[in-house]
Length: 366
Image 1 (cartoon, rainbow, N blue to C red):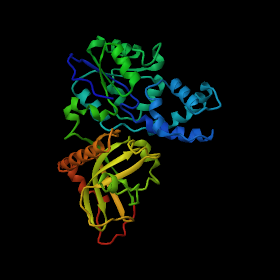
Image 2: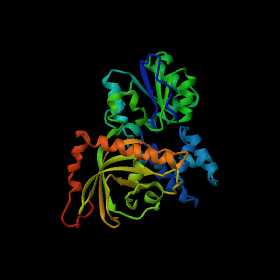
Image 3: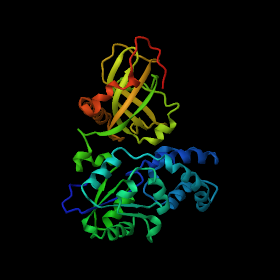
Image 4: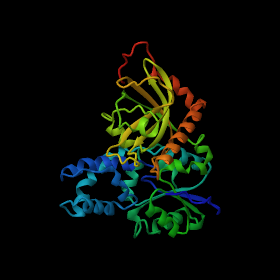
């Protein structure tokens, strides 16, 4: 999805979508469907998630029943899977930059509404664990509160009504085609974002040097052999980590490019840029974790322990028309990461105890 031209009209209020725009709902959905479909002898393919993006829960369920040829009616599917989803919403994570943007808009006194195709009760459940989110919105509208969900404009028109604003004075931020279509049909300015960080150029204080800060998170393990394409195909020697034990992490964090610090206990601490995702250019069957240590090593270090402290986010995962364009983008990511890691906000994490270097390579993963 491309970013529209800069907004020309005066925007008085912002209407935000929830799933895929503020919250990484896709991770929870994928984990639930992965388990659920096994009952029918089917295997969920996470790359098919875009088929249900932006749809109402019933429409999404109907698409899954049809695509996988399930021997049940859509109503039965919804009835059986809904309790599982309800149990999982408390584990949902905000997308990078979501809380920062909400706080930014709130701090500047810009009224906000939340408009989602999900039922109102489901929305309330999803945001209940996000600190101060509910209080930040002047209005919350669920798909069950209007005659038709997105791509119908009704949910956005109702949001404008509750904000007591003209539709033309509202900005919609959406991640899906149905949402973008609905916003435009409502006569509103619309910003289409695959993930919220792509919008950071509109709110400059929400982004730093083309990056978004994250609460640091730690992963570690032994360096394993990957697909052999890092050095041979891309000319970029990644230090792949096994995804074993990181199923939950891979569902919680959106696919994309991150950066931070990497520690090899017997070698030192280095700048690092890392991709998490499907690598659509290479059509991966599983999500992978592929860090690139920004240092020239004289030898391989397969089997050595690698510890990572991830401190920032650069961009969502993309597909590319050519190998050359992929390589060019990866080197752009490197330049952004190297520059950002010089900033005090990020450089201070170089001393994270998790990266502690020893003269003996006998650290255990924490």
